[in-house]
Image (cartoon, rainbow, N blue to C red):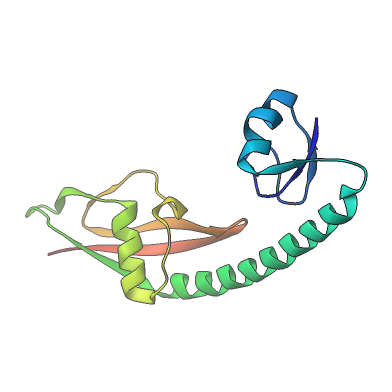
Length: 148
């Protein structure tokens, strides 16, 4: 069944795309939730206008993400944590701790899911983590873990 997506659907497509999906998926999920409309011959104009609006919004979001990336990469983010005498932390520094430290240092709010780390930080010192701000815009964050 062909449907016009009214919102981004992971694994299916983006807003304004006309895609072919299984009829059960369309009837049971996409159509009842309002995520899609059943496509017909006259929907091509509506799809084009939705794609144009999506592209304009994406360009603005990409510019904002580039600006945020430059601010985040310039700043050194400091996280204070309780540690033992040999430098091992009691607990660990998580993505949420890094997001809070970025907010304090740069006044930029991020979601914790934007931060990617191989594993949580468990020792004092400096580490590098990445933050995915937008599709293709990735910031490198220098995190310094200090003892409280």
